[in-house]
Amino acid sequence: MQTTTLSYSNLHNHGELFANVFRARKQSFIIQKNWDLPQTDDMEFDQYDTPFSRWVAIHDFDRVLAGVRLTPSTARCGMYSYMIRDAQLGLLGGSIPKDLLDDVAPVEPGTWEASRLFVDHSTPQAQRRSVHKHLLQEMTGSARALGAVKLVALVAATWPRWLLPTGLDVQPLGRVMWIDDGYFQCVSINLAAKMH
Image 1 (cartoon, rainbow, N blue to C red):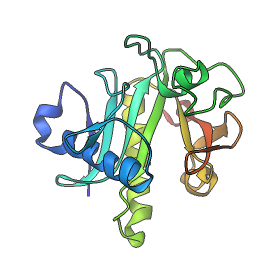
Image 2: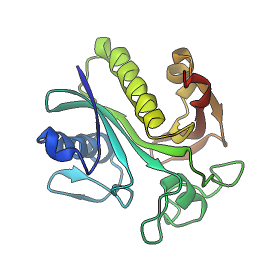
Image 3: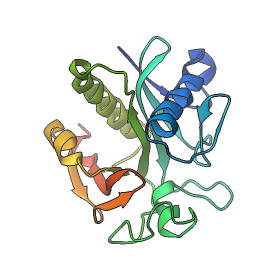
């Protein structure tokens, strides 16, 4: 199992891996979850897949087992910033409720959003715990390397079951809400305490 953090500046070093992340996202979000998202050439993408973002991939060579996108809260591309903030501002057409956070979405250096987190549905149950562990380690390690001291994320409401055992400092940022096919909640992951 390999871990790679991709960016527009290094994707040429990794063959098909970058495209395979988007193919795996299509499988996870469009085919498995039946979400209505943009797609082309067998890949899922959205307005946040810009050079501001980084993509963490857990993979066996070119087969993507899991992934997550990291985007700085200070990113701006046209009218968009990052998904949680744009949902709060009503820019996503109501697909995510505007009241997803208890406070105003942060826009500050050091705060990044983790989004499009997935584990491939065909990953055997016996391997899932290891894949989750590698994904969280690479996600937090990459975020720290990028200067993040905090991550915000919209995750499945079952997050205490899979995030708290990792020892990460995770706090809810809003209410549990039904979106499309399940219950979700915004959380904050404090990275500052683990910077040593």
